[in-house]
Length: 123
Image (cartoon, rainbow, N blue to C red; front, side, top):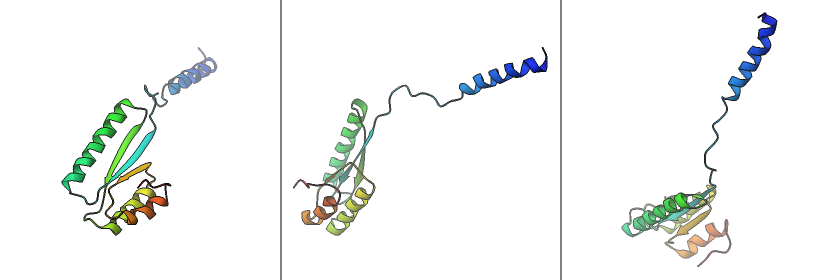
């Protein structure tokens, strides 16, 4: 075989080898992500910790069997402080969470940050 005949064969071989180097095809379709925040009155409170654990459990269950990959963000102020809690809510909104469940220290302090993102606020 001459080098002129070998060049097209080498080119075909290289093309076939590189075709197999693509990214693997996922076996299951990728689920859209849903991010929810669970905001405590204060971190470290056993009542709200239990609620956060339940929220995480349900997110895991929904992710396993539902159409969404559900992520739960547990957040809250260190102490029961309405101003700090409003800042936490503002931070979560800046992160573009899809929803927030909040136990407000002061309901009027929670309305403004939530109203800036969602309407209506369920009271």
